[in-house]
Image 1 (cartoon, rainbow, N blue to C red):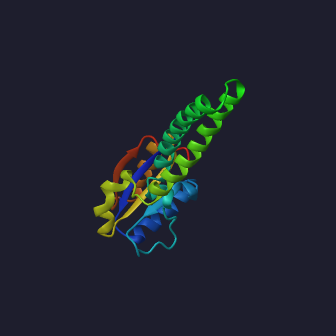
Image 2 (spheres, rainbow, N blue to C red):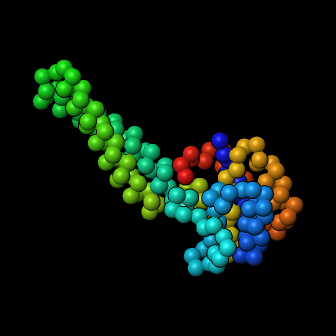
Image 3 (cartoon, rainbow, N blue to C red):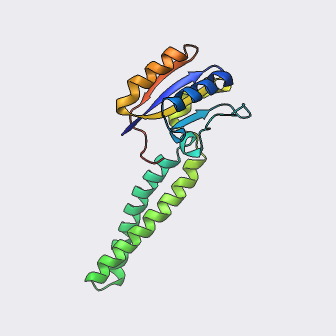
Length: 170
């Protein structure tokens, strides 16, 4: 299980130094993400992608649940009206629930990918002012050590707390 550390840095130079320090501390590049305002210099940084900057994952999870429930309900109705019972009725319900889950996930993902992340809302002003947001995902056992490293080596930045439940995907 990982936790996400949020850290704000004043400029690209500082962010680049943090990136190097985290790599030397054996944090994999895929677990280090930087967000900055549009057009900001990102050379040498691992930029956050749509999975970190949007509500795509959360929306997909909600769409899956709602789609499966509605599909299952439609399957029960279809089985009641169209099928004479038995294993075919159960198959119709399962098929409709699966189709509903797929359609719900797909449609909610399309909406979620275009919606800015609620988790990053509190950083919008700082990012717009030119600061760089570091999101680093570390095992629970390394949180204190990584925070101590950042504090010791980069006093120009400041901690913005932890995200206790980061999605398993990404």
